[in-house]
Length: 446
Ligand code: PHE
Image: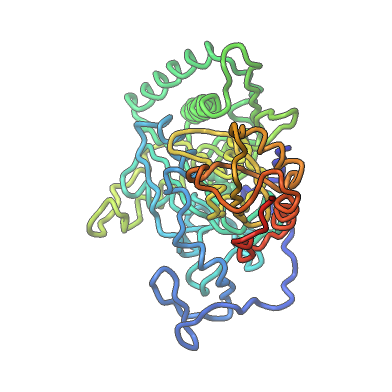
């Protein structure tokens, strides 16, 4: 049974950090006080808490593998927002300023603590969320974009938490002049018309309320229109991801008031899945501070060959969302454990192909162990199903897959009916080691 934990991974609610009994020091240093991360050297200091296991994950970029569930999901979302810029190769090392300060995180936010985040040294850390790239992406002049990346948070060990996971940030800004606002209205009408005809039930809340306020520099009418655009865009994405056919039960979505330092009003979105409300994403109207900071930022973005001053977008208003890819992929592909995403086992990887959502078929937690059995085929031949029933009787569920390999007529050594052969098979199928093979010559039945 698929179980997806409902505990949030958004920065809003973080569990109380566990006290560190001692700093973890199993990092590989290039010299006494340097470590190498993605071919770049960094000095270590008293803040360093990144470990070798985490460093090893940095080059993997699962979301960029087209036939990996995370890559398939990324493409699916990108195809929904097809006219957005799609960014997915942004370096994971950021400054705490990028990850927190430029977004308006308070100095005492728990996310900053070394018990929650991976620090390379006091000046550099691994991004804890894709929002860390909002300022630079807006600064690069992008007005509608999706950015997918691996993010890093120190966390508990269980089937739904892993210290590396993948997020996608989506954002869109509009000019606040007449044409810009007319553009939002037109888009809202288009999206509303589409959703009105769709099989979706939405529990909504006010776009703005005293507890989820409009920002002081925003015109409340503009903020309402942008929040509505966010809700309509998100609902249509959820419909694309989770909506069934017209005859299926409608997709149920609910909006909840939330708090993020870098959006206001802010929301969380949940869907009803197997009788439980599951949190899917966090979002809101982008804090003006982010857009103002984008104006001050010198662009070192891959889109620009040379760093250059940002065009500035303080006269814009916009929305952003951040979603966890693993959470969604676990539902769509029925993947029961977040650790499976890191598997290099062909039994995992071969189950998925580009642009296809398929249901994961569980396999043994033991390493694959192949045993070739060969035997004389009795006169009149043997049906594959007869052989499979024999295997079932002998090996039970230990046998995961039985295939005819090679030319059956060239098989030697074992007689199908030989009690010795069956005995041998039983013995070998219980022995999980790859090295141990059936002896190449067995007594053959008379
Ligand atoms: N960055 C937030 C998180 O990881 C999610 C988010 C993104 C919320 C964009 C609002 C807007 O928790």
